[in-house]
Amino acid sequence: MAAQHPIVRLGRTLLAVGDSSSSIADAIEVREELEGLIMAQAAAHRTARDVRDLRRIAESISAGDPDRYIRDVWALHRRIAAIGRNDVLRTTYLGLVEYVESRAVGATREDTPDDPAYFAHRIELHVGLVDAIESGDEKLARAAAQRHAHSS
Image 1 (cartoon, rainbow, N blue to C red):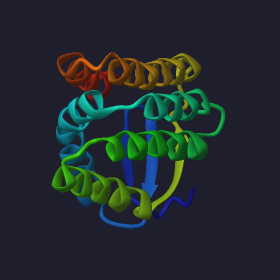
Image 2 (image 1 turned 30 degrees about the vertical axis):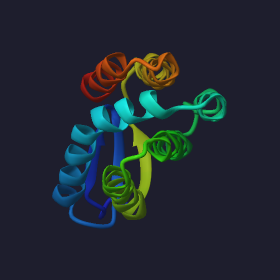
Image 3 (image 1 turned 45 degrees about the vertical axis):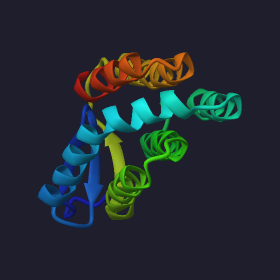
């Protein structure tokens, strides 16, 4: 990761971006606010195939390589968004994911001794998103989105 790129913090993952860090942070903030709706839509409309796809993606999230971790997580979020039936919500959410992803130059982990535990926790939160979607309970899905967005 080149030092001249602005940095955006995603929990303890540092994302180097080729654009203004404030515009990326703004996009992440809006995306996080939409996640409750995205999750509720996914819970309401998921199929068995959707859940299988989500499980496969969630099980492949890697904590060993920060760049891969971010790509894996974004793939899961894109697949979750694809389930809902609200086209405006899905298009807006995916546009925000694409905006951030297209401006990301690289990711690194903070040099703290608890990074492995942190990433294990983050992966567990993403598996929890899938569990909530599989339940079909929209309220549970919204709560999982809140835990995901506000857990560090």
